[in-house]
Image (tube, rainbow, N blue to C red; front, side):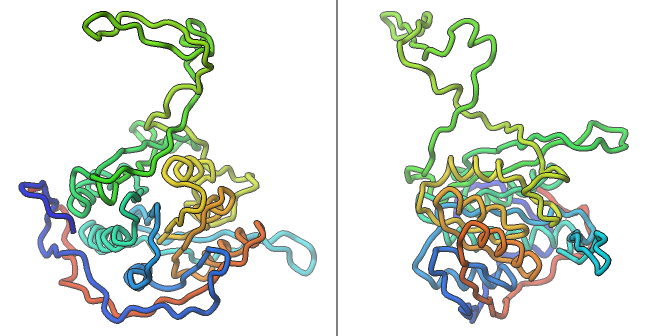
Length: 344
């Protein structure tokens, strides 16, 4: 864990340092010949076992459970003997926790383990919702150091309205942290369309600042170069995966390919390796394959691994497969009582 003096810390009774895993190993059942590997088993064991390998990742994308307090299911559709479409429901992942403290303990273990697998100029993106994003940010500040914080991206989307006496919740939060804030980060500037008012005033020409003798900007003028647009901001409006979308897999909490494509295009380069410890529907690896990256995904659910494998195979890839083994060394269990979190 990164060390900074006088840093703000999130604390609760029984809190400990991130867990270590001893004797963790990966049993390779099929080699990752094309750069893609799916690992089955506990993701903490798998992350600790991956530390024994020399390869490192340019981006770790973590999309953990959101502390919803329920078990999520995978919805499938199959035809029976009569040709009728039958809806099937199978467990996907359990998001029930003893307390917020136990959730943050498990999350901190995996963030710390994933950080160790990054390249020096790589980054980690943690995808959470507003219910836990403030706790998660302080937790990441502790693990990475406050200087490693790069950006908070707000993913804004539209969905079916909920019945609530409150503003509708229509966004998630993506926290981006650099492995080494002193290193030049991997980052490619993306652009979005100019505002209508800017187009009306300047057209599609790039603006050029006109400075006075003191170097202060007085006005702008047009150049002959066509602008690429406005530099991408940290609020992204991207649609969720619609029920009838071709990319929908039936796996719960599936994220849209457009969201992962923007992340990968900005934070990685062709040939880079991507790590997804919460594989789910395999969107991160599927997008990585389309963009000329490689990747490793981890999940304990065979159904998730099956979906991810099918998505990669549809792109002409045959991912390797390994199984994680190991005994986790944990500290005291997080207390069941809630409401004891504090920032110190």
